Image (tube, rainbow, N blue to C red; front, side):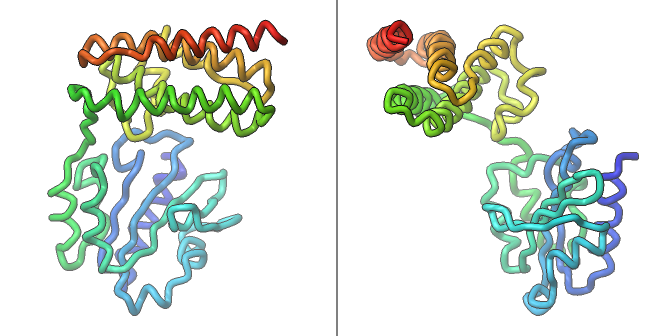
Length: 271
């Protein structure tokens, strides 16, 4: 048994024993049945307003297992670090927030695997009304605007930032372009699993050629490495865009690609 599974069992017990906890759900890899020894445990906990005021997230998580540190992440959830560097992500919410679950793009797992506690039967219908999997716009021409256009926007920005000598900013912009490249590769290959976190499982779900080209489009934050990665990203982006342009009957920005390729070649020659 994975240690995470032991932690999950303890969380379930704690939820059942807490009368002020109205509902709780598990989400993420363990709910979806895709977890391994590196996976987080992830929960939403919906308390009565009175009980939520009393609950200290660090103490609540510490009652599950010792934690070496706890923090609030950028989404307002409490992240606890359990033994073995296991991450636990806990959203400490109130019953008033149960309906907000309906705003998720998809629930990501079977309802039966997600439900932990549902004392009033309010959470289950919210979950069942949601799609289990997010369906990306694979067959919509809008996909070009959503996933291809941002790629070239970030790529040109990265080019200018390298020219200015802001290599760390350029490295960040390249990262944004890379994520859209992964989406473009998934679109081109009709491999839409894990769409909301497109890098997940990419090594297994994309062709070896695309994975190699995606890896070539990564770099250290030096001018030389960034320029080489930008050239690799442009080559891959151009190839993928032509596939999608043919599918959606939308022209690729070949003039812009040619201009950027020439500019990158000139800059590389100058060095």
